[in-house]
Length: 101
Image 1: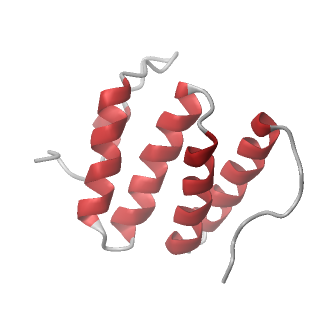
Image 2 (image 1 turned 90 degrees about the horizontal axis):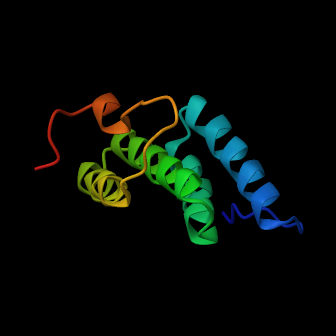
């Protein structure tokens, strides 16, 4: 099944639509579909904030799909980005596992 959105939007608007779609599927427990949409956001290479969030959430979807090694790879990439959330939230503190080792 091809889960790519087939319409033309500016990159920023497309990223928002893709993130909304990914979150919809994530909330429904359709983690494979959510992973596909988060991947599309990552491939757009937009702002560090969107990239960080999409990687973090793709990791969550992968983790819930039983793909822990892939999830950890995404979360490690999140760490290397060094993004500081404006509200001071550290996404790494919210992980469902204690360590990325």
